[in-house]
Image (cartoon, one colour):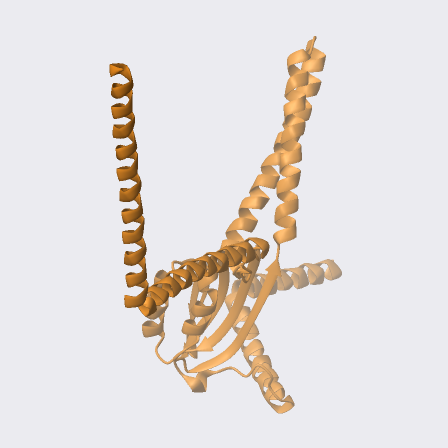
Length: 313
């Protein structure tokens, strides 16, 4: 009987606890529904705007990412075009070109131009290779050979012919020796290789005759190599330094000038003067040999007397 009462009490307690739990769950659910309804009634517009802004931001972000990815793909797809650069023209002095100028000019003051010439040549980095000065009653003249670097050739010709009394002659010529320079260098290299082979044969020579024969060939090749090397050096120097053959003079007495192409009358008068001068020179020469005439006359007198005495006898 007591066990039955205890079981009934325990069952009643469990039932009461279950009912209370169920009621509390219903109250919580009702409260949450009321709260949500109030929120929806209170801020419907703001909630929609926030949602729209969130969606728009997400869309814009995705669009920007897609646009960046598209640009990257376009850049990857487009081939990289190489930048075209204009070829740089090499100046003339990179080639083996021998430049020569021939200039003849009249100057106002010989000494002043002579000093100026040396200063200008020095400023160009050149030098005077040859000089020949002469003077007559008519003029004082100087013939010089000037060597200047090829890059200063045009400036030198321009400055040397400026501020002069008269430019009588100006001639410029160029000679391209690039092909000869390259060919000579190639032949020199070929000769060098042949010499190396002969040196190898010289080491393998077994007797004196073979040694002398190979050595003779080596000497001949060595002479050809030295000639080729000298030619290369000459062409290189001639192409590096241009030549200016300059003749300049100052007129001292214009009346003392000799006519290079005289007329017939002038030639006749000059011939008459020359003939008279020749006769006078002949007479003077005869006077200088008067002892010979005296000896000849004495010999003639002795010969006549001897012939007369022989006839009488």
